[in-house]
Picture 1 (cartoon, helix red, strand yellow):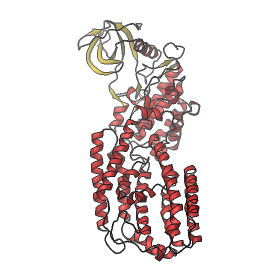
Picture 2 (tube, helix red, strand yellow):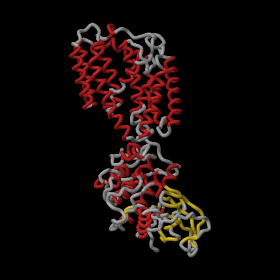
Picture 3 (spheres, rainbow, N blue to C red):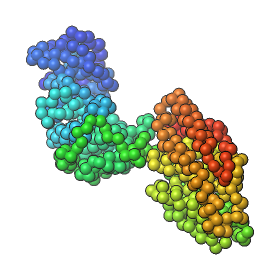
Picture 4 (tube, one colour):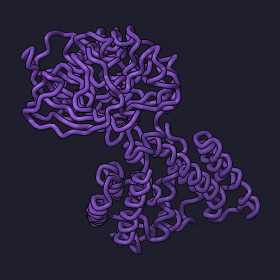
Length: 575
């Protein structure tokens, strides 16, 4: 193999028919990237086709990359790795002549839904073997990703059903001059935490990347990739959601191996051999149906996991939950009719205590707040009001048990209704991190609106139509509360609207995606119009306390909701 001159700095545009290194006749350009252009060429001496990479070395970093790729590939000879035939310089340009593989990248095949689970498992096993070969010879690839994996159209055997290529950022054992601790190279969305931090790397770095590649191939989602580089960088090093959450049908031995391999701590990942064993154990059970299997209905619609959204959701939800708990404790006793209520100072103090408790320990504190308030109301002689409080709180505990901070949040829908903006609630619910939470919040907001309108006898969403009975009729009797408040909410048909709002919240991130402002404007407009129209249609057949309601704030609420959706998407886009 010829040596590479890293001082080359001339760029020459090659055309079909040109000959380089004295033997390679260029036929056509195959592609280009940040570090070079690849041509299909014919070796005039051996009569075979090769992939010829042209690397213009404008600076020392590019020259070092060219030399690194040549040195790394020269150490390797494996059917799962694209072979390097020759490296040299011609007219001041560095060339790498490699095996030409007719096929497509793993990324292209996954995007087209061309692979079955069994295909992915076989490819993963072949790549494990290829990486073990490289690691045994002191080479860490450091850029394992779908674009650097070629799946041949006609592999020569099981070991070559996938081929690893592009060792341009590989780390070579014993050659620290090429790759120093502190360097950060590779592709962020597949980069291990230690690599992103510029720390020393070893085979476990490639294991992390390969496991993430297989995770994406099996689910259709890379849980590290965000809408922008900054968002992706924030996710590197975070604990990723279990793949079993997305693909509950996969064998446990495989999901456990993949989950372990993407742990932030390299010491906990296991080895390439462990992953290979799990893939072997899975092969006979893997599906042969082409196409990525759709994620779980509850956890997979839209993004499987959004660390930024979850973090922001949690911070906002704590504030809303604390405000809800404090307000409910301070004001609910005042709604009781014909009973002696505590002094205002006592109620305010109780509200502050409840708010602080929910802010610190949301799930437990909200449970004790609701139960304690209901018991307090019973002691005050208002068991009917206690029933209303429990009717509002219990559904949120059941539907959002695993998201304690969100449980009181649906009360915000009632607050929006007081300002004539009740229809903006589905847009706010649509900002939750998972589809289940979005749908639950959308439905719960409507439920809180109905109860608040019945208890307060104030127009929130249903408007100036017939109102519920005065508090004196039902607050002192639990049975009357069921008959006069809860039954009308359930039997009126209003819960159909809860389904409409739930669906609207679930689909919002699929319509307003935060990728382009123009698309978001169009999506938000169509979404808002659809929600307003469906809400009006549902209300038109509603019987509310013996008459038809007159909706309040449909247009304004829908408009504000659309603006909220666009604003939230813009924030994500900047992140």
